[in-house]
Length: 502
Ligand SMILES: [Zn+2]
Image 1 (cartoon, rainbow, N blue to C red):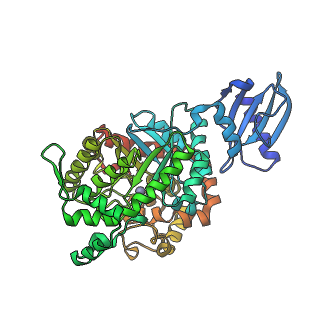
Image 2 (cartoon, rainbow, N blue to C red):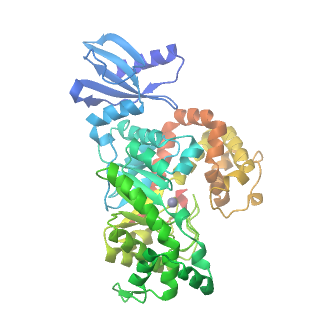
């Protein structure tokens, strides 16, 4: 049946001038006594269906055969959102599920091509896989939607025969518009990014200005202030947390709008969904999250009946995309210990590490100190693996991509915090021999440049890149798998922290 489908798809593809192949895998589709075979091209995805039924199983057939094999006919349907919804009503494992407070690992897949590779690795570890994970910023740059991201992730499960569970994270939500879209698409995990709602000026204002602000506080804010003022909490391990006039005043003034935003988004989620995971993220703010800020926020959310499963703090050191941690490891560890104590005392949620791509230096510490109460997000590292495949098998395309990235640096660096200087790396790399390109990609500045340029690269070379990665998908999968596996090994202590992973 697989062979017949394969020959048939080849013939249809030729007739319609398309590039299509089947994935040699059959899903039994019980309610219709049908058999499903994934069919795909560089960007298109279809459901191949062997069935004895006369009535269509999915919507808008793209190709229909007459009786073809015994009594079975073969139909190809587009893998549209509507058809995905029908499919996942029967194959429930294709629907994202909530994770709760289990240890979890997120792998954003910007190109929507490697969720199968991610699942292949994640299923071997005791982490709940979050394989759809994109922010509105990434959606804009890649020209995708919450729906298409979820479709691609679920395809990874479908096309690899994965029957376990997975989650879908609508990452860095700052507006109701995107929240509604993600809810409509069926996401299981919602990350509220509060960075725009922090009144930052109160964090650095002089005491005199603070006192003036105090005079203007509303009754709600005054209640918050009194609740914590001059209180001190003992959290075990000799760790004490104290609020004085100055720190609580800064916290209440700066976080008051944050509480309002979370409350509002959470009531929308409550209204529309029976189950969901909620994460609050502070990681993209400018200021380190103090212990007091963490304590106050968690306490106040619980007081309002807002149950959240993870919290992303801003830790000391720098967490730039696609490269290792830069900073003082012992300072990170000490800070983390305090934050973990707070989280364990308050209870009910995990600490979440964002920009977790390639942060090998801190992985073992993060894993050990959080005692299993963690979530980690990675994304850029898998994108860079795609470019690595290009550098090895299509040096010409890689050089073009590099030059474009260099030229569009000023536009792309507005959206991401990166520390490298553009004039420290070459504007073009014609002089580099092919076999040196892969090594060139290990340079931190080059990694950062290519990381932030994905929007520009896709705008210019989308078709070429997808076509190439389709032809080299085995190699692409293998490299992505090996890289994510290295992340998991270093995290869980199954491998020495080593730079050779990249
Ligand atoms: Zn983040």
